[in-house]
Length: 114
Image 1: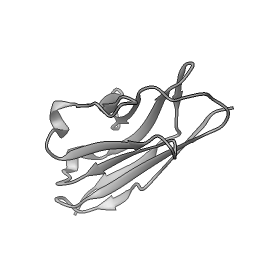
Image 2 (image 1 turned 45 degrees about the horizontal axis):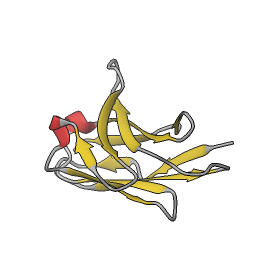
Image 3 (image 1 turned 30 degrees about the vertical axis):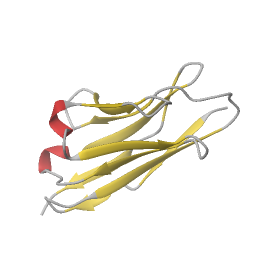
Image 4 (image 1 turned 90 degrees about the vertical axis):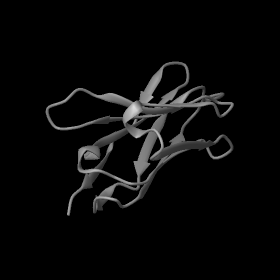
């Protein structure tokens, strides 16, 4: 059984930074694309950033220049470095891993508020 566990969320002031981590465990051969999504109250889940196994990344326009996605294939872990956080970044952030199918974590809450 594949499990994804996110960590690193919390409360931060506008302009601050957080680093999210997502560790994938279980039995599988390899992880293909990995990504971070978010869902704010009353809104649909949306893609934040994604990264291929080879390290090619793409970002939603609303985070370009502020967030950086990275991964460690040996540790089966994906990261999201979030800088210059805005109140509108407040959401539950979910990790996604494409293996034999799409797997999701349970999410970690990020709250940006003064």
